[in-house]
Image (cartoon, rainbow, N blue to C red; front, top):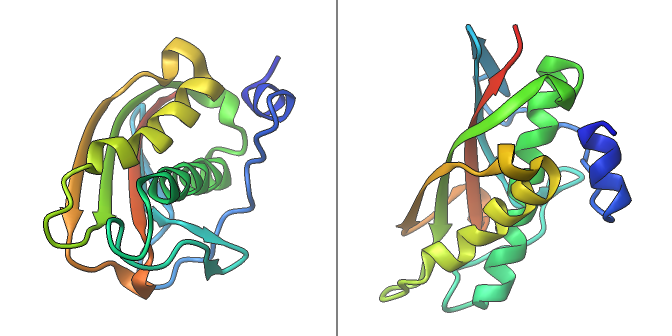
Length: 153
């Protein structure tokens, strides 16, 4: 079963890749590593979860935003690779959480991204991760996620 079939079988839809909002490309492959540009909690070109986690949004809202951002990372990867079946392993996830002052549960928010990657890729989805709270994100999105994937050339 392909990764996309696995995702679909458990009710997860990989969205279409978003058009970059700046002067960059969605992903760059160097050797076996694919570096995916930061993707936000966006759907159909607009932010889904806006505001600061811990003020405007709950930890659960943030979790869902991180999950959506990770799926957008997979969409960006697929736009370059052609298929997610070229992914050999999720190597690294960096997460940026638009955080209210004093909010310290960024790791719980970023579990949304980590959990969905493991659901899709199984053990190959387990990865190193950084979770950081930031004062603001573009378009006032709640979460931005970037990933590094090991892929077949």
